[in-house]
Length: 194
Image (cartoon, rainbow, N blue to C red; front, side, top):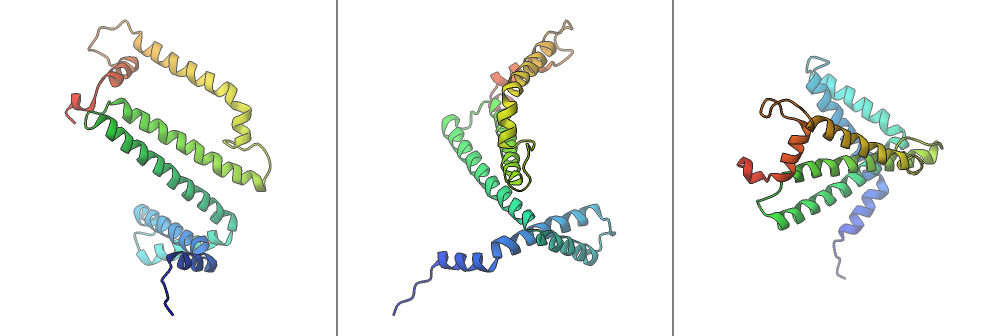
């Protein structure tokens, strides 16, 4: 009889004993808290005390299954966001090579902001399963408020660009937001010697 080693079976066993639901979130919370305690030096950088405090807090947090579920949602959706961003970076590299327009940095920041709002929405939707109501960034909140949020954002952005670029001061003495935005849209990274 021939036996084959199956990684799928190994991961199923790990899932059944709680490695992904309890152990890994515990390790993540412990590591983050320990690093924060070491950096802030609340207990004068005594590693033993920092370790015990971080372990106790992580254990108390893991007692609440709601926290573990929220962590799973956040981490799973963060991985999805990272994969999308990496795919966009690969496509941008294929399309532009080393001569990437500088605007892509701004676009990247905006995509990151959209993913953060999307991630908050996923967490809010999960939270509403247990505590019904219109929570900020939930799907219901966006459905109710999107018709007035988008026009207000467009008006604010347009007003900032018009006000900051409509200056009577001589050129060279001040860098306006509108002028910098136009420069950003027209430059490439090679123009700055990147």
